[in-house]
Image 1: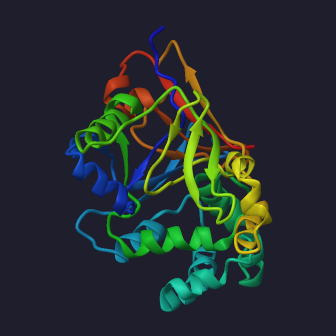
Image 2: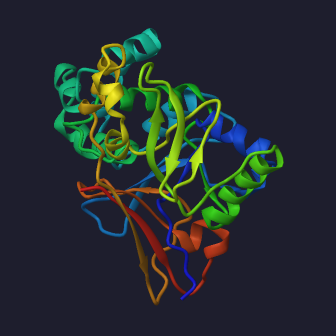
Length: 311
């Protein structure tokens, strides 16, 4: 029916400096639709109801985050807020060194070690884990959560979100391709990598063969494939060579996380909200009513939900 099927519910946080620089370089900053500075959570026990952590305008970090947490009385009790805040003090004092040192602990293990109640995991960290890495808190490294929290706490607009004002191919991918080709680059679509062509002696990449049969030679080669696909493409030479084998065999420790972007079209208007919602569900990550959030999809009569299903 002419509707766009998006690969994912793509949200842009203020704490994405490289992405912000990309929009600026492409001169398409106006295509970002910034939403109110609030983190909105669905109320699990009250279907259709939301609660917000509101970040006030004019109040710099970290005070805006402190206000947002202290002023919300729907998710955490005063005691739970203290039990959550005190263990985060070492992060504020130790910075990235402390954050990196927590990598061997899951979110659940870190909470237990620091005496956090189970209610905080249920109310807050399940939603954060699903939103950041589409995975349960007993499997997610606490470093992931702390890295995000550290950015949000220390950057005034770090946790503010923006939506693209329309479909991703036309509004973001096309300007990227146009910019690239203007500088002499080429964009090949409708084909994919068949194999890496490597030197039999040194293992150095000498080119890539595409499924079309075309061979492309370059100065540098960068792979952005998902880890499971990349593992299937690794040349035998790299796995047999003593110099490269230790590096590439580490990929065996990484596994892709299954996630699906779900679109639901309704023949009526749901309770409107113009922004991202953290679901706090064991199955869903985040969702949004795209008829409210995205200019191109705007509809005053019907809703279209995009939901990130992460089982």
